[in-house]
Structure formats: structure tokens, C-alpha cells
Image (cartoon, rainbow over all chains, first blue to last red; front, side):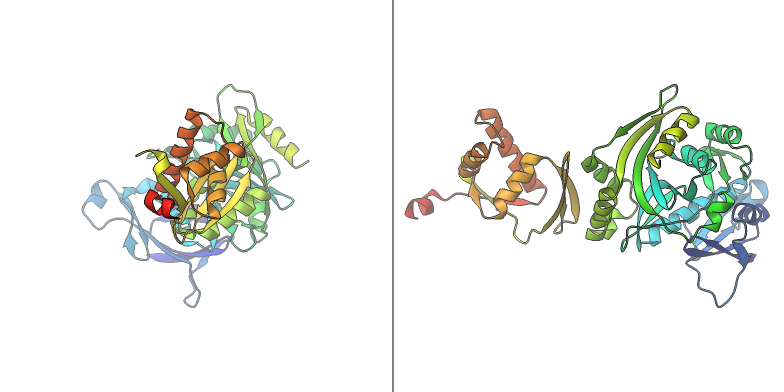
Length: 286
Length: 105
């Protein structure tokens, strides 16, 4: 098994695997961020992806995710190995990076002013995020908003955007130049693929942004695009609910959300047409 | 027992942080580490009892004077329910008024 160093945002990850598609996809979707492992280098996370050691590997090949040498999740079919790397890395960051308030939100920015798209799975935030970053917005994160407890700024991750089911074709059509990883079918989330962050977002991955807008998206088929003001008290509680570590951070988490909301305008966005949604969100930055 | 039998006060060692918004108050309870989203009457109760314990009767009278609630049975019952809720959330505690002590005082 070979080990690789993957740099993503503020984190350096050591990935050990003998599964060729995993490292091929990492090289495709994290361009310039993969290197040989250096013995004297510090790694935030140690991840291994390997097939289980049983006869099953010959009949129905599977993959296991190891974190610090411990197998954490049930094995998945081998063709889901790259997706498992992405999901496992989300887990590793959300469970350990407590120097940040971590929200379940996509984050994009223009002129270093960040727009947060929080929401539960299925709200349409990744689709909207993928569309926006292919129309001039900078990708900070598709899944995890990393908010500094000290300053309130957002640290970029610029990892690939995860798309599911119908969203895959929607973005293929919307952004024909986007770089896609392979599509994997029959995962627990349905059909899944990952889209590479635009080069400009990867180049600016060390450039933090200050939050300016919080928009809760909701995809509603055949609806008009509607952006409406959101009450801030309920927004506070919704963000606390969507945080991975609010309860763990205690008063620091309360203070971080309080500052975030005081510095942002908050909205609900209902949309069905991406072009209309983009035009509406572009006006926020006008 | 009737609500009038109780005196209400902040829970001992209670410390809170709060932030006010147009649609209500978000309060962080340092004692329990829980966060709550409360409406204005509940905020008024906490603010009023912060300066000292009060009997239900006195609290009700002041709430009416401050136009937090109207002077009717439904509002009186609502005030009682708010107090019980704040007790459940570890903000307040209640004690039975000892009328013998009150009379002596």
C-alpha cells in the first residue's frame, strides 16, 4: 500500500491506499495538492482505504475506511471507494477541527465577501453551489463552513462539490467545462459524483472571506425564484441545529453564531431555475 | 396547589448570555450549556426575577402593570405555564410560600 499527502485548505491528510481509482480521482479533483508522504511532515488526519481481509474480497470486493488505524464505518462496495474517501474526510474534519465553528453549509464568495448556503441534505445547496462557482463565485466549501472562533472569518477548503442524482445532469448541462469524477450508482445517497473546484478557487484557497449573507436554499420544482428576508432569531437556532460542533463549543459556539448573524443579512431562497437563482444572488453583491 | 402558593426566583448559580432579535431572544444557559429561543413575555419574566424572588401574585400584578399580559384568567394561566416551562428548562426554581412567615414579617 502506498501513502500520499493531500493538502486541502488548512489540513494536510495522509492517505494510504492500494486502490488505484482512489488516488487517480484525488489527483484529478485535487490538482497540485497531492504529493509523496514526507516522514517529517505533520498530518492532521491519517486515512487508509483498503479492502477487508476476507474471502469476500474475491467474490464481492469492498472497501473499508480507517481513521488513525481504526475501521469506523461498515464496508462499502469497492467502486464507492473514492466517495467513501470524501465522506470519511468530511467526518474527520467535522469531528476534530474544533478550532472552528463548523456548519453544514456550502460557502461561496465574491470579493472576499462570503455567502453561506446552509441546509439539510436535499435542500439544493450543492447544486446551487456548483452552478455559482462556475459563474464567477469563488468556492470556499461545498459541505463544511469553517468559521473562525477568534475572528469570524471563513477558511476555504475548496474541495470537490458532491452532486447527487438529477443534479449531476443539471450541472453537466449548466457547466459543460466542469471536471467530473466518475459517477457511482446505488450508493446510500443514490447516484453520486464529485465536481472539481474551479482552478481559481483552488489557487485562492489560502484567502479567507468574511461572511456577508446567509441564504437557506430550497429547490421547489416549477416554482418562481423568491428571495425573502429571514428572521434572525430563528436563523440563529437553525444554524445551531445545522452545526456539527455547536454543543461541544458551548459559549464559544453561541458567541460565534451571534457574531455571524450580526454581520450577515439572512434570507430564504426558493428556486427551480438555476439562472434565475444566480441572477437573484448576484444582485446581493451589486 | 394554586399558583398563588408559590414564590419564584432564578435558579441558584444561574448565569445566562442572551442576544436579542426582531423575532425573540436567544439565551445560552451557562449552567446547562443549552440554548433556547424565547419570546418577549418569557424574557420579561427572566429580567424581572433577576433582581429578586417574587410571589406569583406580585409577578402577575407587575406583568399587568407593565402591559406584558392582560388582566384576565387566560393570561394569568399563561403566565403560570411560562413559569413552569422556565423551571423545566433550569432557569427558575419555585418554593411554597410559608404564610406563617409572611404574617410574622
